[in-house]
Image 1 (cartoon, chains in turn green, brown):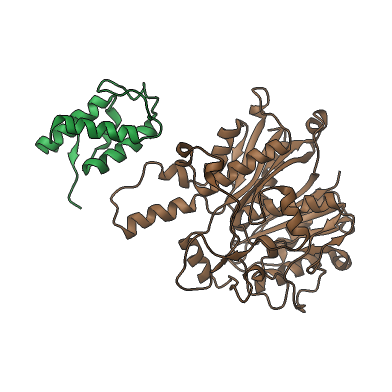
Image 2: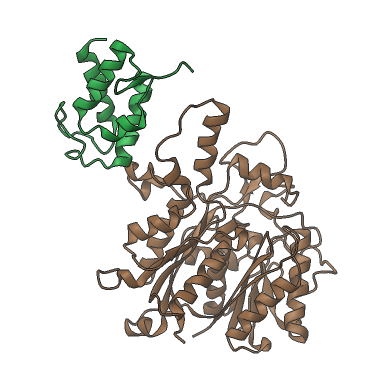
Length: 93
Length: 408
């Protein structure tokens, strides 16, 4: 999957969140700048898991700080499928 | 001892969403019960319910707020806002820490349980939404009311099945008496009209069928009664320390003068006479009332074979020769059983009865039952001065709460 496409889809998931709305977004935008508390971040992570059909481990979800962290993690696992990467490919259901 | 008065009320119910509207229906024996429409059942008896029909969530909340709110929490917030407005009570930095919240609930966020577990078991979902726990927890109503209204005092959630909100109000009454708070937003909320809850109740074989007229499905104390009807809704009352209420010239509905709380220590579903009787006795004693000074009892009156007989016997035991002079009624005949929210709704109706000097009727009363031989105010209200009254709530599990109120 092209990097731009991953980035666009991640940004679209953020956009869909009612708390993010029309705020300006780029890779450097932090969750703090978006005034997202940890519960709200977990809701977005939940939606990202759906979007990419992946499972984001607890420790990764807890350490993400900006949109770039998310895009980088998704890109890594979609390319490598590495279990040690930030984001793990979800088990086939 | 500090005295406690009721200075405001808010309600969301099958009889409408204002105290005046509820009173108009109750005093004219108008039922809010009807065919179940919120979900479709393919079999069984639970086809009749007391649904809240005049409620649209988006009229009260932003979409992003609704994500966090189960239906029962929404009801509680709407009722609490209305109660505070009705009391003309302003929460400020000065009084917020002396204002607490006590919302009882039998079921908590049952719609959230039901919908999320359906995904888990029915659709093999591998994960739950992150907001599931905050939506379903029993204290969500109390917590959201504290947040939406800015109340920072002692706050709790009582869950004692069908007596939840009577206990919640009773404990709030104690909190103000003891000086731990000056104001309590107290009541109950439940939204139990889910497939799981209805099927479980059906298995208890205590639900009334729709019959030929769903509005008349609940017929407490009538010999042809078939059982109870499950309803949804919330009632929140503003309880206030008497001197504080006087100081700000608040309109006073009534004074809470007694609270009796007992356990049957008997059977998990079959009530005793002794437990409810002792709860009534304790409430009357604390109120320093003689039994003949009580004019009206809003009965628990579920409309089941067993409750109505046992409650009648308990009233006889407490009131002796005065029992026949009491006006008794079950407003559940009109609003159904709001589960954990019932006691608060019935206390509201009880204080409105005191204010209006009218004992509200038991609707749908058709045939005398030899075992239910009190004056249940059948089908028509009765005008009479009401100086003091009781509101009874008796829960499965044998936990009883009785509140005594007096005209001021």
